[in-house]
Image (cartoon, rainbow, N blue to C red):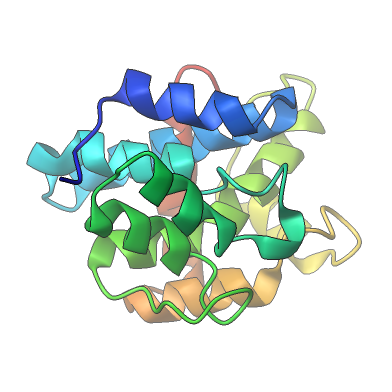
Length: 186
């Protein structure tokens, strides 16, 4: 029978397939953002689930980049994880590398913030503080418009994510920045 997992169990699975500090840090950043949004959007009782989805969202990316969001489903089934977790994790690749559509609000948040946290994180590294704590919306917007900056962060995915949520792009940026600021690791 498929099971719910703790954060420690999710971390153990993540680190079985990921060793690069950059990938692990990105997983923790997305986890933190997802936990923030769970509370912010009224799903506080599901905070651990939202966080685990964020933590595991790229579980397959380091070892299987060509099968991203496909291989993760196999990995999670091998670990007997529950179907809602598997669906949520795979759905962040909708229209990019898989056909599992983000349906639940949590899945839409993951789809929207995955690339955006990467862009904001890259922008933070350019700051003297190396932190998001003193960052403002205008800094993110400037970097967002510069297609050469953090070129791996797909701006169209970020835009589509905001649309899926029914949010303005600026609102998504501000809220994601606040989510990242709420995590002292950022």
